[in-house]
Image (cartoon, rainbow, N blue to C red):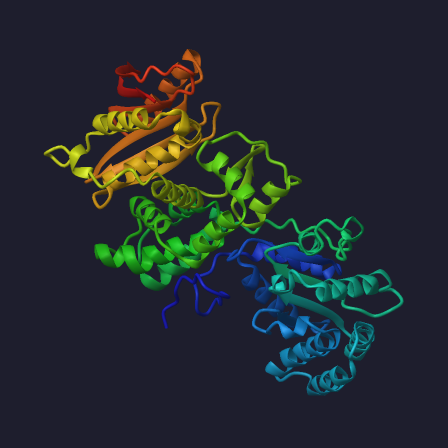
Amino acid sequence: MKKEFNVTGTCFSELHYMADISKKVEEVTQMMGKGRYFIINRPRQYGKTTTIQTLTNQFKESSDYLVFTISFAGIGDDIFTDEKIFSVGFLELLADYLEIDEENPELVAWLNKTAAETVTLKLLSKAITQLVKKCQKKVILLIDEVDKSSNNQLFVSFLAMLRDKYLIRTTQKTFHSIVLAGVHDVKSLKIKLRHGEESKLNSPWNIATDFKVDMNLYPIEIKPMLLDYMSETGVKMDAELIAERLFYHTSGYPFLVSRLCKMMDEEILPAKNSQEWTIQDMDMAARFIAKESNANFDSLTKNLEDNSDLYNQVYMVAVENRNTPFSIHDSITNLGVIYGIFAEKNGITVIHNRIYNEVIVNWMTIRMLRLQNKNSDFGGAYRNDDNTLNMEAVLLGFQAFMKKEYSKKDRDFLEKNGRLVFLAFLKPIINGSGYDFKEPQISEERRLDVVVTYFEHKYVAELKIWRGEKAHDKGLVQLADYLERQALTEGYLLIFDHSEVKKWDSDWTEKKGKKIFIVWV
C-alpha cells in the first residue's frame, strides 16, 4: 500500500512519509534516561503525539524499562469529578495499556485488583510505590492530552502528589521519568485554574525540567521524507531545494509541512498531470492552503476571536508590522507562542510562519469587509481590455473612497485600520480573477508588500506609513530593489499619512530605473 503524507493524528513510518526527527527524539530520550520530569508543551498538530509514540517504542525495546503511555483524550469528564473515580480510573488506564499488548498479565490483574481498593490520592500514591517495586524496572509514565484537565483542581492535586513522591524518590519508589504532553504548560494551567489567588500560584510541577527541544522541522530533517517519497513514487524534484522552500513557507511547523506536501502529491500534480515538484508549484500550494478551511486554521482564528488582547497584538505584528520587542515573560506574547502564532526573530516578535501570516491577514480582511460593508464587487471597472489590472485606477479609487469616508467619526477607525481597509477594498476587485499574497517586511519602514496576481499578470503594491522624506526615499529604494527581484518594471506605493492636514496627492516617479506610482491617503 502506498504511503501518504499525514495531517491527522499519529504518524507511523509504515503508513506515512515522515521527517527525520531522530535527533530530537535522542535529546528527549536522554532527558528521560536521566529521570527527568517535564512537559512537551507545543501548539496543536506539532508532532507531540507522534513523538510520544516514538519514545514509547524506543523504551519498550529496553529490558531496563517498563513504559506506560496513556492519554486523557476520550476518557470523558467524570474521571475528574471525584478523587475515588480518578484514582481508580488512573490505575485502570495503566492496566488497559498493558492489556492491549498482552504483556504482564499478572501485573494487569494486580492493577485491576488494586484499583478497586484505591479510593483516595493517598492510596494512589502507595499503589504507585508498590507498582514500581513489583516491576523491578525503571517505570516511565507518558500522559498525552493533559489539556483535558486544564481547569481541574483534582488533576493539580494529582501533580502535587507526584511532585511530593519525586522529592523523596531516594527513599520511596516512584516513576523514574514522567512526560506530559499538551498545548499548555502546567504552570499556565495552574494560573488559569486559580486566577487571582496569590497564595496558590506556585506550580505543583516546579520539579519539572524545562523542555527546550526545538520541535520545528528543518530542511535537513524534511529532505529524507522527500527522498523516501521520490523513491516510492518516482516523482522528480530537487529534494534539497524543495525542503528549503517548505521551510520558507512554514518555518518548520509540522502540520503545515505535511499539508503542503499532501497538496502537492494529491492535488497539484494530478491537476497538472505532472510527475515533478517545482518551486512555482510549491508557492501555488502555499497560496491555496492559506485560503482553505481546516481544523488547524479554525483553531488559530478562534484563539484570536476569544482573546481581544491577543488579537490586538497579532494585528500590530501581522498588519502594522510593528517592531515589538519579544519577551516570553509578557503574558500575551507567551500565549501567542503557546498557540503557535508568535516566534522570535532577532529580538522582535514575528508571526511564526508565512502561511499563518497570510491566513491571519486574510481573516482580518474579511472581518474588515463585513464591518466596512460599503464596497461591492466592481472588479470590471478596474480591468483593462487585455485582462490586465489597472492598478493605478485601483489606488486612486481607494484614495477617493478614503477621502469620502474620512470624517471625524471615521478618522480614528480608518487611520488605525487603513491597511486592512485597503485589503478589503482590493478583495472584491480581484475576486475570481486573481489572488493577493502579503509579504511583511520587518524594518523601520513597517512595510507590507501586497503581491497581486491577476490573469497571470503580477503587481506589487507596498503599503507604509509616512515618516518623512528621508524614510520615504529609503522606501523607494527598497521597493525598486524588490521590483528588480520580481522582474517587474513598475510598482505601486500606498502611503498612509496621519498628518492633521492631508494632501491626498498622487504622482509617478522613477527610482533605480523602476517606475513607481505613489498615492497618499
